[in-house]
Each structure stands twice: as structure tokens, then as C-alpha cells.
Length: 209
Image (cartoon, rainbow, N blue to C red; front, top):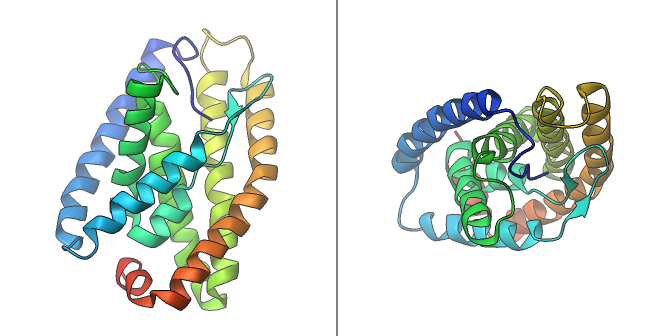
């Protein structure tokens, strides 16, 4: 899902840098109030796990690439604001150190995977939580990655720099990640379920707000 350099028109890249910057700043302020000494290490562990999971990519003709994202998982475990910061840190390191995602597209990549995926996944989970942790987490993982992919499809499809229009990019990104999202949903549910049974204190305190 990482958008490389050259796929986005500069005006679209700038718009998402601005939007992402606003959300990240708000998230930093909010997360500082929510995190304590016990929760802070969890942010690093979640970020490291997601970093490793994202390194496996499959190219998508007419789109960018498909891979596990983990934004919904970060939101459910850490809360949406700390989850956003964790995802943003992963994406910055991937872009600057591993050239996975372009620097000009970094704002869009963080928006898709660190904002849309995290917040959509988190609030989907909260909406369905009373129906069971496993079901809520599975659907949150699926919807989060699918929405993020559709946003990526819109961004590259609306850019004249990219060879394909949104008539191609949105369905391609949405369908591939919708299918991959089924697996991501089950993985998300499995991890959240394990934490709920082994360390419920972490889950309850991070998603209670």
C-alpha cells in the first residue's frame, strides 16, 4: 500500500502532508495525556511488530502493493491517538531508512495507514465491541485496511503522474486489500483475543476512552 515517489502529483502530496500533520500533532497532544510509564513500552512493542509484518509486500498491477498493515490493531491496543503515533513512526522509518514509500508521498502514506486505518479500525471496534471482542476486532481489521487502500487508490488515481485513473486504482486497491483484509481481520482478532485473556489490563485501559 506504500505509495512511492513519482506516483502523486505534488499538490495532492502537499494536501495530505498538511492533513496528516494536523492529525499527528493532535494525536501527540492527546497521547501524552493518556500514556503512562506502563503503557509507553507497549507502543514500542506494537510498532516493532507492525514494522516487521509490513515488510512483506506484493506488487499490484494498476495500484501500488498489498501487505499487512496493522493500523486497526494499533488503534485497538493503544487507542487511536497513540496508535496513530506508532504507525507514523513505523512509516517514517520505512520511508527514510528502507525506501519503502516515497518521501513526497509520506504524508499520504501516514494518512492512509496511520490515520484512516487506525481511526476507522478503532471506532469500528468500539461500535461492535458489545457483540464480542473477536467479531469486533476481525471486522475492524478488515474494514480498516480496506478503507486505507481505497484512500490510496483515490490519491494515485487522481494524480496525473500515475498511469491509471480512479476507475482502475480504486477497485484494484480496494479488492486486493479487501481480500487480504480477511486474513488481517483474523490476525487482529487473534492478537486482541490473546491480550484480552492474558493481559486484560492493557486492553481495558487503552480502549476505554
